[in-house]
Image 1 (spheres, one colour):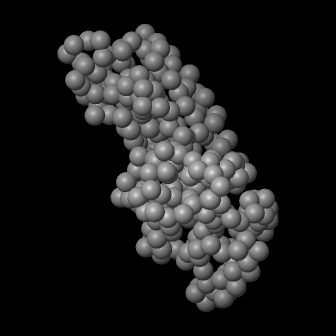
Image 2 (spheres, rainbow, N blue to C red):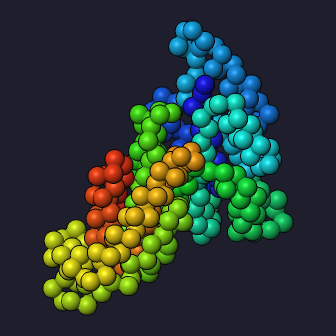
Image 3 (cartoon, helix red, strand yellow):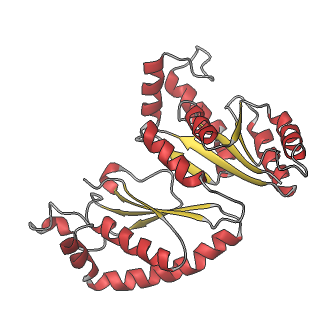
Length: 287
């Protein structure tokens, strides 16, 4: 059986870059393949390796917005019923950033019929892609990512990956002042904890510094919060994995993303490692 990754998402959000990165990692990638041919390509690729080990083991399929999204969803579900490991990578970005990217390249948006603005075309595409986005295993918001950062995310998610690999986990700290991350599964607000920002000696530090960590961990509510949330994760992590979820991302937010969320993220990441998981840790808004 094949390991199949369907690469989809908003035009301009990085589908082509993701495909290039996967090819560099040894995946066989087909760009803009008609959905009706997906099954045939997989059968030919897997069948060609019967008994020889030369068939396609990892296949990436890039699906554009002009494909019938209902057909895409149906094909994904049918391939899964045949025993293939099928995952969906969805790339998105904020509308202002996409408008900026199209403006810099002077390319025409695939849904731009000339009768409406670029913004309208982007929002129309966003709406059309909702069904396949709902089927996605991993969503990456590329709004603030450089090409190198996107490559790191792709590499981290799909290097040395196998059908028997454990569920990939990620935990991110962020500041609500900069907005909630769009590509996460669980969002936890820790603004109920006292803010080290109001302590002059702690203000220039971050949650990675021991004085801030000590301050956050010594708050009366911290221990009970961590105990209850860790018990919840003890239920959720194996349950998600049991349902076949390949990726789980958690975001921990405070006001600025510098103190409380960073300290709590590091504490939860340590706990998850003790549970046998290997979370990717990111501090989005840490100075």
